[in-house]
Length: 328
Image 1 (tube, rainbow, N blue to C red):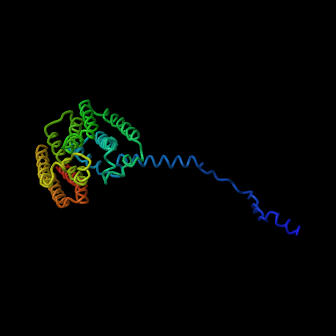
Image 2 (cartoon, rainbow, N blue to C red):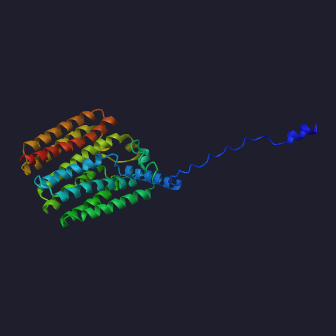
Image 3 (tube, rainbow, N blue to C red):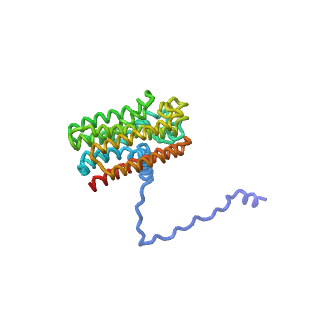
């Protein structure tokens, strides 16, 4: 009995720890990134990705829609041979200003975007970045834009300053006026007088013809864009031409498309352009007809596709213009 009780009190047997194999004399330890450094790198990468999404680098349609009018103006102001340095400055300026505009727009819309299906996953609306970060990105991009503007002639700098003011005020003014798309058109077309001022030192009548065409063009494609969000905008009280036009939206867009083509025709006539330019306008007219077909039922997908298709309109006009100067 005592021996059995003593056995029960003994601790259970445990397996012996495994023996370590002898160290290889040829072994050289490899350096590994510390965990903290690795996590910091991942966090930085995620932050930069959120900033890139904030300024819509993954959606370059806005860059194209800003770039085509600037190229139209540079080619006409430079009679088919724009200054290469100015061309680089304007291309960089388009990318920077569009990115800055997205950052300040999302900051202004941070309380509206979470209620709109198309925008609720944006970094600021989804609270993946803070409002102060969006402002910081805007300020950094604004400083780059100022530096680019300082490379231009004095008259072009004045136009650049006015354009910067328009871009900054647009996100707030669009909550007040019922036709914010036209104000956005002014912002998108402001590169035209800037380009003429930088290239020629003056802003002639043809520049304002082009400017009117771009204001109307931007207003019509942004109306298509607003048609995607019309139901949500009505609920949260956001103003837009899509709401103002109502059931007459397609007819009014069609009238504006005709006015854009007329203004571009007159600008081409003023510049002495010929058959290639008119062919570019004809191709643009076909794209406009296709857009009317896409928005015929006012469905979200169709309206958004029509908005995106305006990139090809701008490209068609530019190709016609460039070929016309090339074979002049």
